[in-house]
Image 1: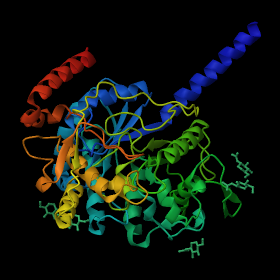
Image 2: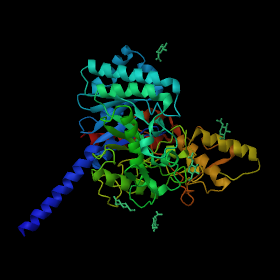
Image 3: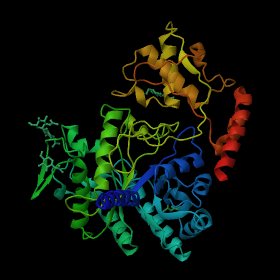
Image 4: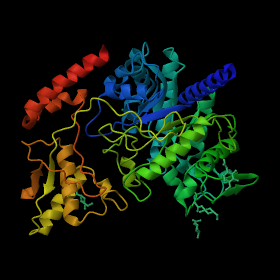
Length: 489
Ligand SMILES: *[C@@H]1O[C@H](CO)[C@@H](O)[C@H](O)[C@H]1NC(C)=O
Ligand SMILES: *[C@@H]1O[C@H](CO)[C@@H](O)[C@H](O)[C@H]1NC(C)=O
Ligand SMILES: *[C@@H]1O[C@H](CO)[C@@H](O)[C@H](O)[C@H]1NC(C)=O
Ligand SMILES: *[C@@H]1O[C@H](CO)[C@@H](O)[C@H](O)[C@H]1NC(C)=O
Ligand SMILES: *[C@@H]1O[C@H](CO)[C@@H](O)[C@H](O)[C@H]1NC(C)=O
């Protein structure tokens, strides 16, 4: 009896310690490049309920930072590439730290200031390298001078900073010739300031990087028969290979002792053939189990530290590689979870906690009235609607790619209508007489026609002006105010 109890207790403690350990290493990216935004306080609740202790943000916003006050969540904040010009000089950097970091530090745990988003990536602006390095150095100096030396400036990198391409085996990897000198400057800076190397890994991208024919190799559940033999090491999944490619590059340049933090890793759910719910769920399950096992990679056996990408879909992300770039969310834009994921790494088939208190706009949609008499007009309005909203689900392999033409036009009209918050007075469902508003959900098969959520706190002013919805908005705003009060109390 006693022995059984001791056993149960032992298992329980093992369970607790496994849990605690994973949350020490596990982070979540929270991108907010969306037309409508979830209220920060709702997202903080979500993070706390899911036991997330580390978050990476792609910008720096007062409402968001304030919402993290008095939580024990550690934050990486970012200066986006487009704002680097604001911190161009040492004086700018001092001012920036004084205004954007200092005021929050009494109750917000900021650990890192991320400079730009993968600025050394092949798809980024080559001329920006020196500028980015200078901003990183200036910000670190300003942080140190202000007595915030525990906060580190850092730059995230993508797998395309490595060569050769494609990569046959991880030990062949080195930093690209055209960025090598700049990369060495970054690495020396990180070493002096005891900061880790921030390495982003996108499994879907590894299909090209390792010239794979088989996506099975991208998952960490060991079903794939594909292997990469690298001297005495046998790689059985692409994550280990991609991670150790970074390790090899660091080793070759004399930085074999530098810690690696995986800044972004995830799997998108729409916008391309491999991007779907089944694959996302499978990838995260394998990856989180691996993290919980505290087994690292062949070249770095210590526990992994990684930030999952992404908390929610971002419909305003610039599409450079594929439509899937807008669909990395573990949650949909409205805060409902898309698939099962167990943030404790135990691999349980459970949905994560949903976002509570999100207010969806009225259930109405804008569709094409199927008037095909003037196809040039139809095409023009289709293009216009898509260009100004988000049609990435129509891309080949996407969840709406099977729609016939008329339904595709409807899809585009609705995306525009929702992104424009269903504004009646601005005729956002006009389309030269081709649009009509319906109250029956036009969804088709796996293609969903979304309805937007009500704007967040910071956008409330805009919401008030949408006079077509004045009564609803006023009511909903009162609900929001009540919600905020409940959260604060
Ligand atoms: C910094 O800004 C000044 C003027 O605002 C400009 O002349 C200079 O080129 C900028 N430096 C960098 C590194 O962008
Ligand atoms: C990729 O692999 C295929 C065989 O699967 C091979 O024919 C091709 O040459 C490889 N491409 C490159 C760029 O190495
Ligand atoms: C994965 O599968 C291979 C055989 O295909 C086996 O040798 C290896 O031990 C397995 N690894 C794990 C971690 O289960
Ligand atoms: C791996 O090989 C085994 C034995 O040949 C086969 O049964 C299995 O289906 C293969 N796995 C995959 C994912 O192709
Ligand atoms: C909209 O998209 C179409 C098709 O991709 C393109 O040809 C057109 O130039 C775009 N129009 C505008 C106004 O951006």
